[in-house]
Image 1 (tube, helix red, strand yellow):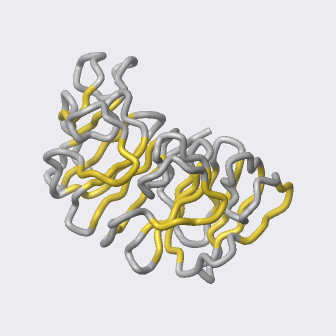
Image 2: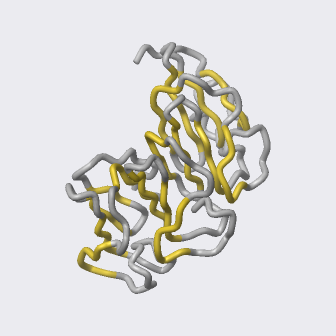
Length: 209
């Protein structure tokens, strides 16, 4: 499984045990496991064939995680659905949702990523905002406090692209540097340590992208 995928129009993305397709008309169809409503069809019934996500149009990208799904709309907003134990749907609750719900106060989004129980968005000005589980600092706001609504990642401007993994994220900045934060038990943040980081740290070497 690869989570935290960056969606593009006309493609399929995979979660832990569900899949969704972004169609060329800006709608989404999903199939697979549906215990937490991750298919977005208003039920918790698993499906072995694609089912449309009702009422969701104008989608430009999608990202699937462990048991949740998020869609970027052409309005620059994000809607999410599915498992919400840690507030990873961004609606300031921990209520699971079987239909899409808008992420609170999130606008001007150009990219969305989803991890195991965290979601993040890159805004048009290069700012990154995240929400959900924060046990290892994967929100990047300098704390380990779980956030059921978006908060800004500390000190990040000029972000050109980013990716979210199981419980960590990395961004490439316009100056060619790479910064990461979150879970680091395997050294996946690239800072030469195995310490979790609750705010972005630069990789020990720079990558020209």
